[in-house]
Length: 68
Image 1 (cartoon, helix red, strand yellow):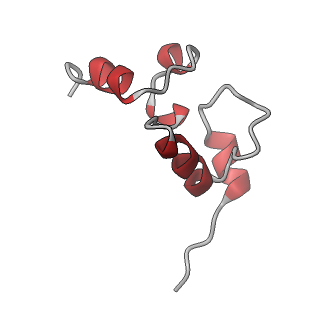
Image 2: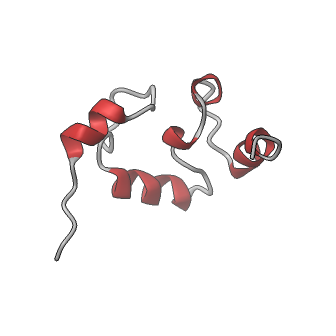
């Protein structure tokens, strides 16, 4: 069984504010692209952090460390 990418559904649920990204809705490509830069995709951040475009691991950890 091969997984199917649900691009349109992903786009509707995507929290990224960079609307012109060619990877929008293509989660595998998005994750691979960000990870190459030691970042995480915007969908893993709350809106107020995502809007800063700081997708660094440090920002992710600093935000979430006291929330779980």
